[in-house]
Structure formats: C-alpha cells, structure tokens
Image 1 (tube, helix red, strand yellow):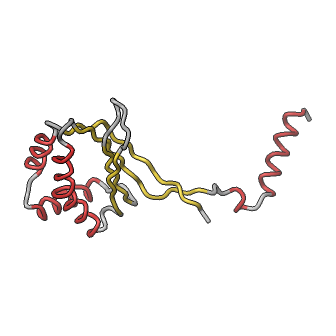
Image 2 (image 1 turned 90 degrees about the horizontal axis):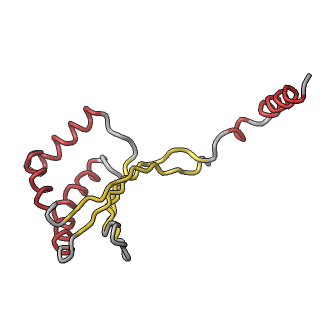
Image 3 (image 1 turned 180 degrees about the vertical axis):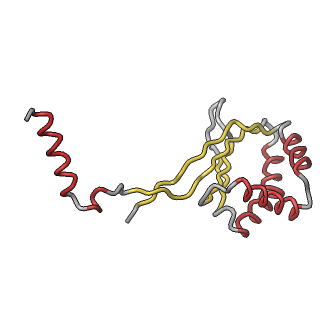
Length: 146
C-alpha cells in the first residue's frame, strides 16, 4: 500500500475513534444583528436624534413588545473618518421572517402607527436631505455550544 493511501486510512480510523462531542464545532449560530451605518450632515445631529427618540424608537419598542426583534442599539462613532458613518443603528433578532410573516408584520406596524408604506417612504425621503445611509451589514452571532 502506498504512503498516501495508508495516511488516508489512518485519518479515517482516527476520526472514527474520536468521540462525537469532539467532532462538533464549539460554536453554533445565534441571533442576527443588522448594523445600519448612517452619515449625518453637519448641523443636523439634533434633527436626527429627535427622529430616533420619537418615531424610530416608537417603532422599535413596538417590535420588541411583539417579539419581532430582541433588541436594538444606537451606537455613536466618536471619531468618524470622512467616509465613515456617524451613527450605527443595530437591530437584533433570532430568525429571518418568511415573506408572509414580513408582510403581516409590516401591515401590523402600519396599523399601529396609523400610516402607510408610501407615507413611511416619504418620511424617509425627508430625512434623506440630511441623513444618508452609508450601508448596512447583516451579521450572525456565534455562541458557545456548551
């Protein structure tokens, strides 16, 4: 038997001899985190803070109360470079909603806020005069298996 075949056979035998627990990954998937990066024009930090403390907070607190999200955070980039976000909005949740679930959640939120998708879009357009979405990232937390 050549050396390669012997080494492969040994590796297979070794993996079979290891306990199952030793073969498990020590990490498993946890919650999702969406991090939305926001750039604010000079002189409008107060305007955006007012929006966050009002309409945005109302939406987020309602979503937490319904169990749609686990929580949210507002992070300030203390020393942003020219091309970096000033604020990062973080939302944590445990699973991606199905299309039907997303539609139902959206309808329920609109009913709660007594608004429509078009009105929400118009509000976003008004904020876009001084607030710019730099981008977002979807992360999945890794938690210890044991």
